[in-house]
Image (tube, rainbow, N blue to C red; front, side):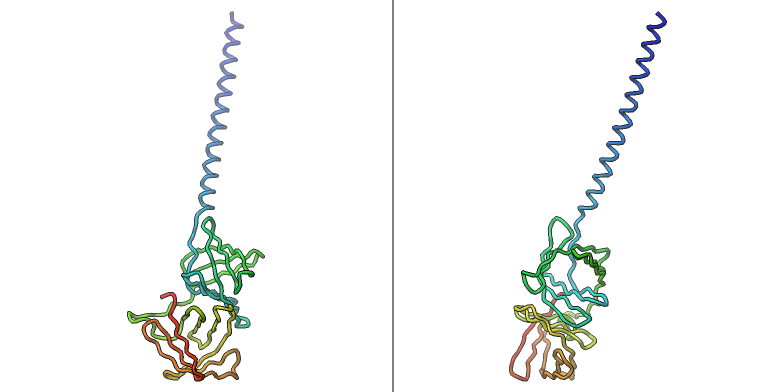
Length: 224
């Protein structure tokens, strides 16, 4: 009789041990699943691609709200028009550099509203800071500095007297230096030896440039 009681007790102890082990495993699996879900949620968090002008000592990105923009390499002053499209399922943009044949997917991070990190497929990474914003009053822009464009041409004027003009149809950019004297402006297109004369006027957010050869560009301020 005693042997039967001992056998029953042993079976009960073994069953309890198995139950306890299964419970611990179940909790571990649940915890692991929960952690995995949290990591997946964090990885899937989507951040909007910012617009504006971002730059560092090497490169400047001008990113417009309409999916257009410009990239300027500061070492040689060359600029190229870009078109970009933001992917909906990841923090990635598809960028066309001057031509649909020159396209690259670029991953990005936005640590804060004034910082943009671009990660190219070849491993190159640029950490860019937002350029200082120009002051605008209720009547629109009050200086040349900024980006102005229409369907065919984009002008970028900077406070330091430098800039670029880009043929939007060809995606070709030309750097310039400029000097302002009242309503008169002199462009040094691509070289200090070039002296292209023009007059300009600003009405609201519209810039009109009348060149001495008779050509006129009427462009609108961007990112106001």
